[in-house]
Image (tube, rainbow, N blue to C red):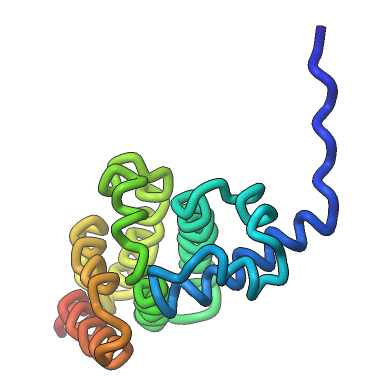
Amino acid sequence: MNPPPAKPTRRDALDNRERILAVAREALAGSGSASLTAIAKQAGVGIGTLYRHFPTREALVMELYRHDIQALIDRAPALLDTHPPLDALRLWFEEVAHYGRLKFGVAEVIHAATGGGADDEHYEPFVAAIARLLDAGAADGTLKAGLDAEDVLLQLSVLWRIDPARGGEERAARVLTLIVDGLRARP
C-alpha cells in the first residue's frame, strides 16, 4: 500500500520560511550569536513557526549555507559569460569575500556540521567553480597554467577568518589582491 501523497506546502508557509531566511542572513552576518527569538520577531513570525521550519540553530545556519554556497557556485559560469576571465575571477573572489564576512560569525557551526568540509556536498562543485575560472584565465593567458583549484581554495579560506568588525572589508580587498597577483601569468 502506497503512503498518501504529501500535502503541498502552503504559500504562507513558504513566505514565512523565506522571510526567516532573509532576516537570519542579515542578523547572523551582524552577529553569529543573534538569538532565534529575535530573528523570529524581526521576521514577523512566532518562535514556534521558526522552529517548525528550522528545528535547531544549526539547521537554520546550514540552510543559509547551502543556499549561499550554491549561489556562489552558480555565479562562476555566469561571470565568465559576461566578463574576461581575469575580471570574472576577481569579481567572483569579491563575492566569496563578501560571503566570508557573512559566514564569519557562524563558521564553527558550518565547519562542525560538514565534518570540516569532508562531508560537504558543495565542496567538489565549489572547487570545480574555481577550476573553471582558473582554466579560463589560463586559456586566455592572464593566469598561470596548471594552478590547483584546491590550493586556491586554501588561500581563499582565510576570508572567513577576517573579522568584519575590525576592518574586514579593506583587509579582504588587500588579501584578494595578493591572491590574484599570485595567480597572474607573468609576461
